[in-house]
Length: 197
Length: 65
Image (cartoon, rainbow over all chains, first blue to last red; front, side):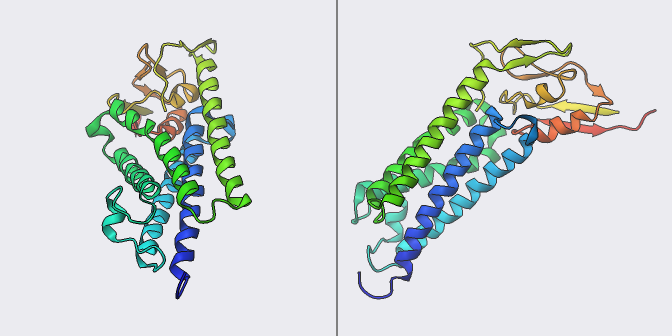
């Protein structure tokens, strides 16, 4: 590495911060449906946290990209930030990051367009969040220069474990959740009902 | 009194409304919201509207005649 390392350090820090924020958003999004804290935490609050973390994570990804174009270590052009595979530096790992970012931005924007595209398409697009998360994890592991350090590996492992656990929790709680009835009675939700995200 | 308007084209079946106010909201066989009643004095409808992640519930406060 030559010269001023400011942008290189900023790129690494913003990339890791974005990963943590977006993992938090995924966890909050899963909690919107599974409601692990019951009535103690309002669904509206969890939804707000989910959206806020997603926007903050995307902003951090933008900073990650800008820092990489200004940095003199890897020499990424603005085109390489937008076109998967156009980066001469670790092309496949960087392409995973570019694809994950573009898809994440599309998913965030899709909420505004949910009426136009319909809830079914919105839901299908939201399932792509798992691709964003896995591609982002693979991007971090294969292109991050801190990835071999124990704390970084612990971070990735913790994130994958947390999302896997929250996904399993969501599937189980939703499948077994009693459906409320006006008389106060309950019955277990039909298994063939579509599961909302 | 609150008048409740739902937009089923936005509903994704989260079911928060039916849990908060089962006297007013229910999920149909397709898993989407339907109304048991169009009006209610129960302030739980306000909570249900703000808790809907898709923003599919609108509540209009009406003056009693």
